[in-house]
Image 1: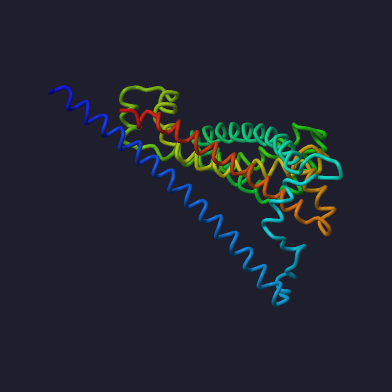
Image 2: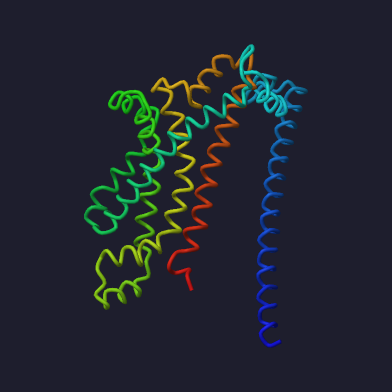
Length: 294
């Protein structure tokens, strides 16, 4: 009996934790659906008022500028062209193509930004010398950078990935630097008192302390990599991705606006998928970080 009571208490605590987790997940899903419904309602309400009052500022409201949400969703399940495949099938293929480019660019940019952050964290001289130029690199419009990258590397996957990496590396570099420098000075002194090598200090103390900073940057960079890949497809003349789909449907916007809006929805969904993937990775990695392991 003495052993049964602690076991029962443990099972009860585990069940309670799982119940709280499920309730939390359901609550977040409910809030998400509520926000989507509210946005849908605001769109339709503004459209209704604009059409009834013939609103012209900041733009005329009609079926071209603001199609019904249900019209946009319906367009996904209609043929993209006469006797052609469904639009959603075309867009999912394009999204998969763009996702591979964005993933490569995200990996390149994150790896470069992480490495650069480590180098800068170990030298104040390098910080003073390079940080102004790193910041200045982000003031140049990506639309100006993209054509030059395509000329240098030729059209193809690599040029698009480099453009995506260009938007990815900056937040990772800055947050990695901040995170590595945020380590507890007392812990640093303790490790030095044990004659720990710089390599050990980096991986056993500084990197674990920097993980929350790094994942905050990765969440931003994940969506930025999708934007960079889509923009990079335009000067690269790549028609298989979302950039090509946007360019194609933009030509017919005046007669088929729902197709372009549907493409934008799929592009937004791709960015959300990238964001959620980083959130999931953060939960797995940060939970297993040394300071969180009892």
